[in-house]
Length: 108
Image: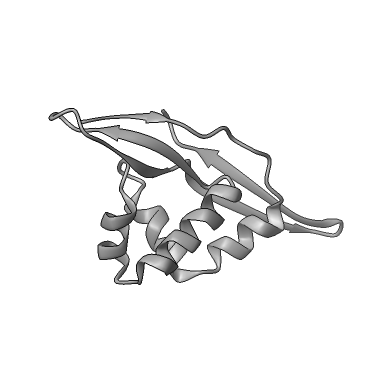
């Protein structure tokens, strides 16, 4: 099985990233995709959520730069869209001039 990235990265707002991380289903998706690409169907099973909920959270994670979309190629030649976490860790610092969110990217 092989995966290739299909979506470009954006520069999301720290507040949006924190909002996304506040959702339990989104956090479960990040954990599930931290060890490799997963399809929406696989994520629906892992999170025990509806497919509509999983797709909404996937979109939120994609928009916030915490997840990437890729095409997963199986040994039989078939392919499907899959998703993979783009971060390993998140650091939040609260300062007098605001909140700073730092992400540590995964090694690709």
